[in-house]
Image 1 (cartoon, rainbow, N blue to C red):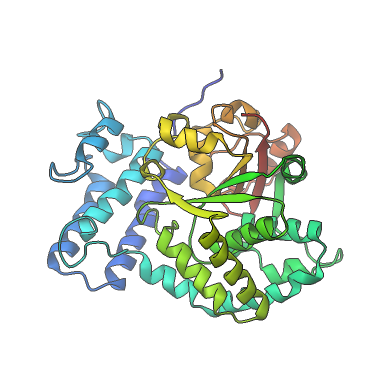
Image 2: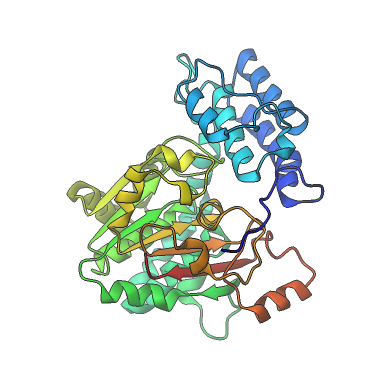
Length: 389
């Protein structure tokens, strides 16, 4: 099997270093501005920022419920070394775990269980852009089932980068959506069509305007009979700023039920009923907040996923965990990197980090010739499918 360098957090000029030294300081300030944390929490948050940009990795306090788990996940040689020397996937995950510790999320007291990212999520879900997305759903009934599926799959892929209303009404003469550089969409649909009573698992990514089209796609799969059962996996607690939790799913379904627009209301009601009946189940697992690739998922989660006709993973972080957060040659076959997964698997992803596999050589050459940071710009997307588990 081919191998590739693991992406580290502090390589000069890298995307990963920019996350720690540019993105995280801005995030920390936003968190401090969004909620009235007291002196204890504010100091702990600011100390985390200083440690993660110029200090060494410190373990969780021994009183933390998952202290031993993180020692095991870290292995030998991670703690006590500079953050910049740690693998990017591991260090970024640990940063968010430490941020929850600093805000008091797990600690008995005033801030226990308070999502530090909730103000961002709520503002986005309540915003006028979501009103426009919900109103645009009124155009769905006019589309044939196959076309509706294509539109909703594209919407779930691009999240808030592509307006749903445009996708529903666009003609061949309209400007194209952002570029798909790998498209196994036809294979995805043919797999589901060929299966008897398909069971689909969806591993969610972000809340807000990205979870909304995921849920609309889920409703379409169930309402059209394309899927008999869907399991939606979310994070067990707040993670990576906007990652979806069960609370976010409920808030989004409720937003659909309240409209605007009759079609949005109907979708919201159908999703609610699907949860009541068990055709839509929301689940979680601690491993979804682990700093490890899916190759290392525990046996109980692997067993759950193994019964799926197809597992759809959403977003950039899940892709990094699926193929390995390493500097792969972009032409390494997707199937080669995901053969470990316990079910057939599809990745819907907008490129926002360095990792990419499964591209054709001429496509890579053309992208490289642009001179732009195409791997991290968010301008390109992929639908990649591995049909065998």
